[in-house]
Image 1 (cartoon, rainbow, N blue to C red):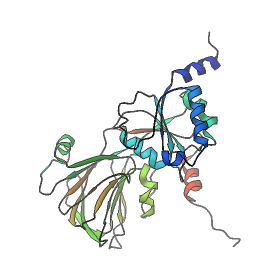
Image 2: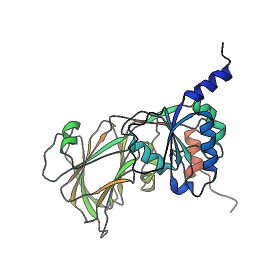
Image 3: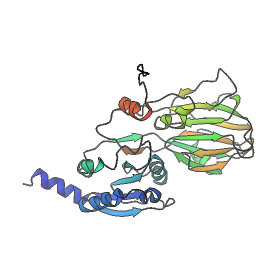
Length: 305
């Protein structure tokens, strides 16, 4: 009978791991080489990818370790194209909400990760499509939308329409599930997942939504109205944003990466994606404590002045 230590060693040796590294941060972090060396001694590293445009959909790994920051992890999630491989982020960036492990603490967690003992949480994603002006489409028919769209992307965090040059206010029509839309003026709009609620959404005054929930959050960017507040709606709703009066530089961004210019009368349709993204949580982090540590949420005033 194999001892538990031997069983764990077997699981390490059979765990296929793909490493995706941010090459810019590699040059600044010598600890990266040591981390890769430790990984290769414990697991079957099936590849080390440093290119930003490589398609990961054909990856044969059982886990992907992302060395970089939240932006690198978002890029990997998009490039997986729905493949359900757990992502573990080691934060060489700044904030590290999604990339929850620091380079210093990850070696101590490596055995748990390679032994399959860390929990992967499914995170809701958005499917974002741009339909050309004047085209009729059934909003609920995803396949028809995919056939007729001129641009499509997925987003783990958010889809954002920004006013762009010459930076005048733009006018958008917002509707959900085919109901009559409302028009508003401002600098754009953010449609986010719960994972993205602590990104651009929170900076624009949107609510913090627990990643344990599935929902869609709509937050205007600097609306020319005192009454237009952010809203949280069903994850099964179909959100439509139509350009009524846009700038030449008005742009749609998905996770701040995939992007396209938007013209008057074009529509941005946002559905819940058919797949989630699996992200491995830090076992010692708790949701409210992470908010307090990362964003100083609910921190008491300094009364000692």
